[in-house]
Length: 630
Image (cartoon, rainbow, N blue to C red):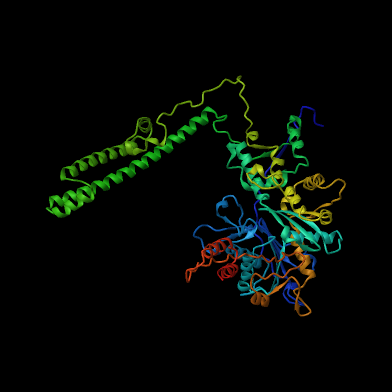
């Protein structure tokens, strides 16, 4: 049993997980024969992670077969076939500057990367058919996805892969209906979904089983902003470990060591207590080497190292002298060849060679030849001395200043005999704990980073937090609708997995709602994966063809060709088409010159007054003018 004086702190190590490449699965026998219809492929196209699998009733297909990061890495100038996708990238940190995603926030805009992601998914699921993918596709998209992005996605799926059917749905709504089915709630469902992913968070009200897209709101704070904020905090706190505080390690801290405070200010006050700090702080151990330079080294080892350094320097200097002698000899031979041109009487070639050598006269050429002959002779003598007496003569030469080309800056010419003075054994040396120096003390950062979801201002974001935005959305409904919405508040998304998130939302709702009003907050059973499971359940319940006609929620190839890529077939978990009225500006009518001067004194003034005052439409202007002039 630990005594009172024993430390109670916790030391954790980083996992630094390396991903392994995904296997290429064989196409299952159940998915090969289209009886009674082809088996759909469910793809949860998330901005942090992509999940893909089959929508088949067998037990082996109950979970996604592929889970990988939604990133691609390709070096500059490399071929398209050399692109690495997801788990094929063993370590993201060295390639962080090469990583590309198909997303801008939560909207797909880079369809070249999206095509590579689809190639990766179809290949690893075992689809080997050339020219087409003969399976319906269930694909998730962002809430209120722009029409242009859906058009480009439909064009990619129908034109490039020639899929027979496509269905689009919102990931958080799939999770909402999947968990409602698990809780045995009868449709149509009414509630409000709080979803927080990697790039942004959403508030989605659902009324009578359909998304109320007019009142949806987005908050541009989510997991990536929390990770960047935590990285900045730790790098400011530990400037000596900037390179070790990588984004992958920060994401590990965020996912496994952070929590949401039910009362943020009260929790911060607890951290003021030294006992609470020592008990709750997480010490993250960074990897380090236990060898300390200049540690306990004996005199013999120091002499041996010094002798090795001397021998190494002797070899380097001898090699450099040989190279310098060869260069001087080559240059001397070239200058002698030019001088022979003068002796042979070839003046034109001699003057041309002087210009190439950047010399002005034969005297300057002779001066360079004399200097090089002297340098070559001295170099040969040094080589002879070094070959004849390698010991003491070489050491004495190293201790003297070397020539200009001998590499003076290779090492300090003075080699002191004892670089480290001998210390008496009775002197107590201060102990330096190297392991503790390589520890990150993660204290209040554990709750400060998840708090930006409710208070984005510390990160510089000038916008409302999640609960303040929820209050704004609820205020747009009648009291009866508000009661129905808050009776089913649903939390989903990977950024909602912090411990204490549900309790924090309940506390905020209690302060927000009227006295003694009822509400219920539910957390998704698997916040990061329930979107895929909900899409799979929907695909199993709604096959593409029912009774020979295209079922609700599916877009066939014929629909795409007839109605265009923007067409959306709505269903319980999809976006809702909202027609937007765009006011077209009325072109200004040119002023017509008067045909004949008016005889009445007040007529021209009246016409001017009416035409300047009435500006909304040209028809009224012309009518009023004709009335006045008549």
